[in-house]
Image (cartoon, rainbow, N blue to C red; front, side, top):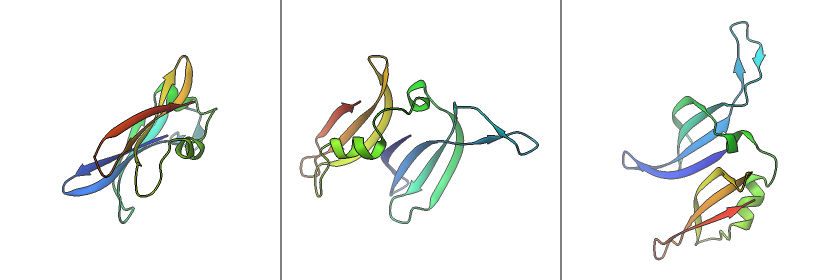
Amino acid sequence: VGLRLEYVDSAWVWRLRSAATREDLAGDRVDDPSYGKESIVDVRTLEVRASHDIELTEAEQRMPGTSAFAAAQLSGEQWPSPLIIEMSRVMDHGSPAWRITTCDTATNEHSVITVG
């Protein structure tokens, strides 16, 4: 549902937010659209360093619209710059959208766009 690049304990990591499936004590699936997971993942190895349950925001629960892949393509990201450093779901005029932050690697200037 979202990601953010962070520098933690002398290493670059992705903070990933995602929808998750909740189960009851009997192991049956419980329909809970607000249930999610947040994980800290090492950028180089993709090793999960930590993970915990979260409550998703309204925008994160309402996924219809532009996919994360399509939003990333519309962001203007290209190698070597600018690079996406954050993607998050937000409400924009009552509809879910992606807020994308890119970083110009030459100047460290950040730009933010919203993609519906």
